[in-house]
Length: 423
Image (tube, rainbow, N blue to C red; front, side):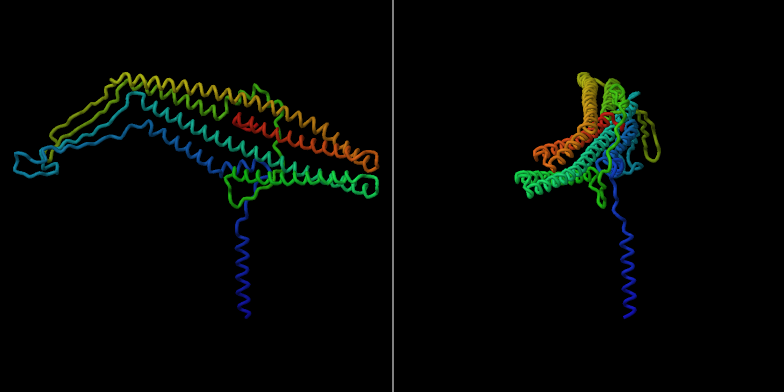
């Protein structure tokens, strides 16, 4: 019996040790930087974009390589006509065997142009990967800011609900003492129910946003998200000058970088099409075997004759139009990016001014008004409508403050998306 207990204790200790040895779930969040770092290394879509960019880079070297050499053999007189021999396929036992080795060589400059076209394609793929990451990072920043705003709104909503419950208790006490009306108590209870409904809706929105953040991280398993603790700091106004931001946008915007690569590729493609006016050349050497010896050697020169003028001219016009289209598309994207940058910058300034106005003026005044109205109502010097109006003003001020801070984060993320880098 004792030995069984010892074995059971040993098994239990091993089981406990194995449980403690299992890796704990990773916890990230609290700050948006940890989410961005996780997504950069784990998100499958961004990984696919990086793989595509790497694959495009691998096309550069083959694009400028010479084509593989060709080998051909010709077996002549395999029936051995006029000879005292039967049909055969062995070179020493037939009339003769001709071996042809040939190598095609493009016209001067074509290989370099093909390599340049492939390099421009690799640059475009790299810019697309960078644009994909910036798009993903922007969505994570927006979701993080939205989640933070929702949690702050929930905290304010709970504080507002506690205040309203206090007001409802005062109204019931006054009604029980004969100094207030039943209508005041009923209106307070209606406000409480409405606020509880708002809290439930905010909780549901917060859960949905948390699920969206997990999706933006690639839906990782064994991962715990911490609630967002703080919003990102805003850059000083000196860094938000439109002229400086415009220069940074033109230098770093990934969409414009992709457009530049596309223009370069189109120009190199046009030059390559123009080089088709000149022929490609093939060189060859051909030994001829008779019996067991090489009886003769031949040299070969082959070139294509570019006679299809109409076809080539159409290809050249197509290539020139592709260059024009790439340039026009870049100009359109630049105009759109500058317009969005200007709009987001103006929105950031408005939200920053609104936060200052509400935080330094409207919110403190609303808190004072509510405290004053509540004290007056308790002493019978004000009616319930004044308390209710002051409470609603406080709720509105808090909501506008939270919204202004959230709008600032949204505008900041939009500006950084246009710039292609963090401020």
